[in-house]
Amino acid sequence: MSAFQDILPHLSTITVSYIAYLVATISPGPANLAIMSTSMSEGRKPGLLLASGVIIGSLTWGILTAVGLSSLLSSYAWLMTALRIVGGLYLLWLAYKSLKSAFGSQAPKAMKTGNNRSHLQYFLLGLCIHLTNPKSIFAWISIIAIGIKPDAPASVSFIIVGGCILLGVLVFGGYALAFSTQKMISLYKSFRRWIEGTAALIFGFASFKLLTLR
Figure (tube, rainbow, N blue to C red):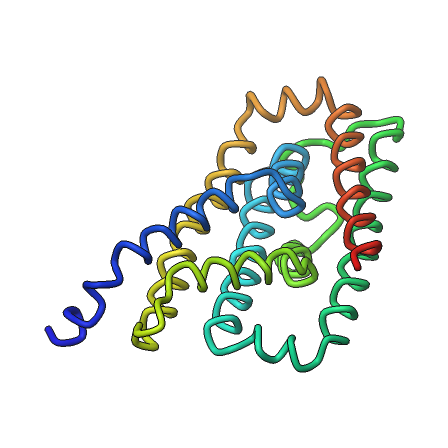
């Protein structure tokens, strides 16, 4: 009861943190785009596996931020620079793969799960997309900062992380389920070149922004 009473005065700011995370998660980005594209082109299971990697990546940054990642990055600026370069190059590779698919002569057969990647590889793809995106770190730093007052107990930051991850499961998992329906798969087949071309542009732009960030 005492622990709940300690948390009670901070419920309003915790709620604001949840809203901020939900908005950031729903907004289009490399992770969402990868989940949508994979679910439409390769089926539900690959989409869910990739989404699970994204969720674990988000959980990782959330926990690290809660235990003081921002102060570490302030002390070792080269860590952020290295992460930014790795993330930019990885997004550039994703842009190349999407562009190659857009100009390919044949559309990939939907629902052929695991034809190019194993289950672990789909998971690791989602994990890498999220872990190599510095914007995820900045988002978590902002979300934690929003929800924590100077007098807040340490448990508040972990309550924020836990609630946000539950929202992440709903959003990322929801994208994978929604975009793996037969209707979406048929839509993908009809507009494959446009979808992959758009994905290539978004990945490429995100890569450019990361690699040129000062």
